[in-house]
Image 1: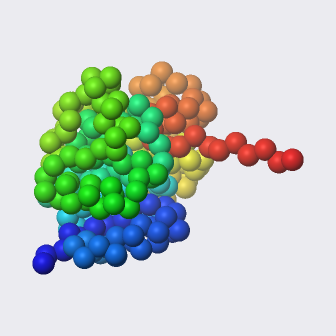
Image 2: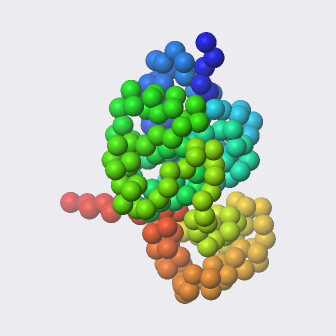
Image 3: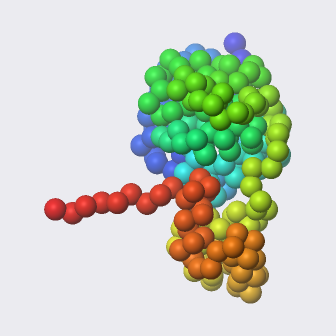
Length: 225
């Protein structure tokens, strides 16, 4: 029996270990790799060519949405199945428009997760019941599971979204330049262009936009007693 090859993309090791343990109990599913950033996920997909990628949305350096877009463009045969703790409407909208094969909430049972992997590997789509029930109210068409992009999901280019995420994560221009392999002057140009394009005037505004667009997660507020 040919196994369904799966790549796990999540920045939390304990989550990856838990999912791997669940999937290894299935005779027809094999975990072939793990990624902790969106950029690493892209690299591994190009090298390993898994049938399915289980992709978290909120990951450092390159978020799961942008990673999904690039994976579907670079390796169309790979199916991307979003597995996230968040089910916000904006996330759902972007995932569907990107052409991901499905969207599961992390509270999903092991049986439903395995079933979803089998369905998307066949070329079908699969959504958690709570997500599926909201698709109609969002007036969205289901994707074809093969990376078909119905329309633009954002006014930003791929590079602009990448720069925006790093800025919103608190990285200085020099850090962004080093991470992306570009000059500080180029980063400054991207920053100014982003502010002009989005009609924003400071880093705080860019960060708020990144959170609202699902590019990064909203920071958790911790109260110390």
